[in-house]
Image (cartoon, rainbow, N blue to C red):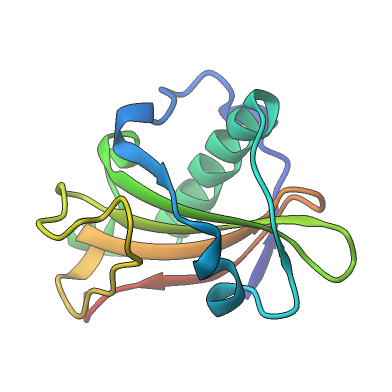
Amino acid sequence: MRAQLNGTNYTSISPIDRSHLVVLPDAFVAQIFPQSTPATLNWKEQKRLDALLQETVHLRNATMKSPSTLLEHVDAYYFQLSVAINEQGQKEVYINAFCQKPVQDWTRYLLSVEDRGSCYFSVKINLTTGTAYNLIINGNI
């Protein structure tokens, strides 16, 4: 499922704590975004990413019937990012999110988590088009 976002209603939400965020080494870009080139994020793009992520979470939560399945306090999560320019020249970001600080070296290696419900999720956001896709919540919730 792809969700077209605008992010404009989410610019006043608490921004992601930058000490809880790491951009993974370029070596992971090919694994996540085949046929893409590693890229970086400037300040304006980081702010847009914050807003688009908050909107993605809000839209997802709006479809959930049980409070136990909600993604909450996402601004306090820990985030691994992989940033790329795709074949169409669009900037995309893979977000790997953890509700607790990972035990492993999360700053240098892409972590994979199985189960644990809404404490862990990942999503891809195309900053150029404002589209979120491949939102995956780990485990059965």
